[in-house]
Length: 205
View 1 (tube, rainbow, N blue to C red):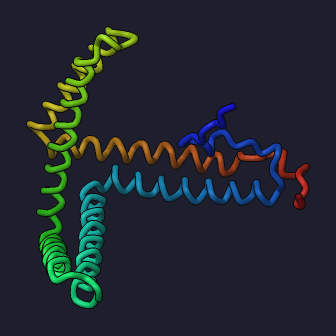
View 2 (cartoon, rainbow, N blue to C red):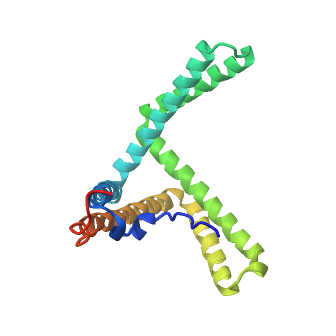
View 3 (tube, one colour):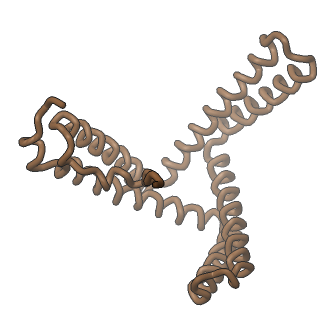
């Protein structure tokens, strides 16, 4: 017998009947915190998309800086490495540090560049996905839906290729709206989860 695999939305299938009062309270706190974080991030993305995108760029720059310094440290101080390996680590570290410093010095320009780059990348992926759908029409259970999806995917991809910045902004805001909805749902569940059950559940095993 195969064991059911956990779902991405496993929290929605939680059953409070088999939980103690302390476990129910823990679940409520977890739902409330995750919901509040998702709601806050979603609001920032929807109402302050430039600030949110710039914040992500700063986080990426920090990550690159840390990685670059790590490679530099390995290349300079690590023992037992060949000269070629040490040189590669140092060169790669210098490149990452230089990129991060450039990003910090031009946050707005870097953010716009990343948005355009990601928009083009997503557009290419959608076009390839649409073409793949048409190539596999013979194996499709519903040719009508497959054709519809293929056309929609290719058209969306072409739009992103011609207007990558605009397309990425739209996708970014959609993500923000999704986070707001998910956050509200999680907060509501934090207040309603286990209601009427916690009183009857023992705090012990």
